[in-house]
Image (cartoon, rainbow, N blue to C red):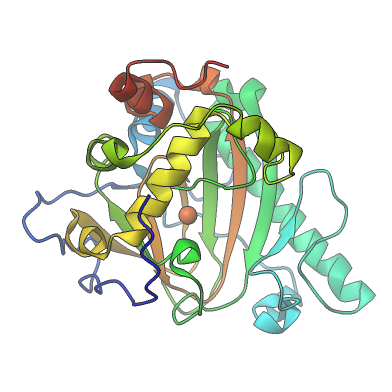
Length: 320
Ligand SMILES: [Fe+2]
């Protein structure tokens, strides 16, 4: 694994929507606009199947007309003063009845809880309306409100989400569970600016040869020492290295085929964030819902990270 510890900023992406700053890669556009304006849209089976295929192949489903509305008074939460200063997000776990990472009076915290819970329920309606077959395999994970500007935040390169990456967590092995996320730009004025990079298969071909397996006993030891919440699989171990290798490589960040996209205020988008190379460049406030999805629910495994890694390494990644 690369040990580059520089804190320099990656080369800026080109301005404008769906621009193509990659030096010599083919132009591509992974953003798929959808017309729906309701969190429980009526979608016929053929359309839903097409959307599911695009999502599973690594597209970003983009809903420019799907707005999440504040109730009176909730606009006050568009301010970083509600953050406790320790966490980057105000978040709500699915089984909790109070938010974490926030500060404020008792009523404020209750109102924050109601706001974030309402977003969790709205986004779940969307996922289940579009993809009812995911329902039995879907687990609601965290919901968050991120009320602070992304750009200029001082973080280490590994935590710098303005660098292209796929999501993978050091302490939270997912054991092949997919990461499905629903984002909403809740800022009334500023766009949320993302970069989206090359398909996962191309990314994996570039970096998997630099990854290593675990040494015997490593997963068990990390679990015993509470470095991980459960035993890490080889899949998690490789995905984490892919996350780090991409972020540490500034030439890759600058030159990989990629596009920049500005999600306007009030827009919603959905993506498998363990599959789609993404970077959040600018933006002041957003809401986000994470789901864990069993790999059993995936209809098209061709492009899923577990399948790509298994093919490249010649063995199933999720075998215990
Ligand atoms: Fe991410």
